[in-house]
Amino acid sequence: MSTRHLPVRPDLEQLRRQARDLLRAITRGEREALADLRTYFPRAIDPARARLSDPQHVLARSYGVASWPRLVHACRMTEASCRDDLET
Image (cartoon, rainbow, N blue to C red; front, top):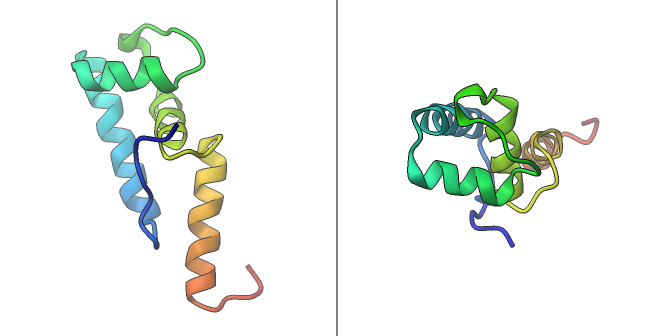
């Protein structure tokens, strides 16, 4: 079950900032960030060794999307649709 909800027009740059912020929170050992990591990451990892791809996956799953690449794709498709960009 997702805990976050994407806006109608998700901002990919904002999601990237969220991932970097979540990485910092994980490596600092912040309780809420570690809880998200345990809930949405497929395996246990040492928070001090987390890489950017780890919180990206956590964010995607918390938004109800299977992976970060799919979340990026959804953002790009939504933006293209709003611009009436049929080629994309």
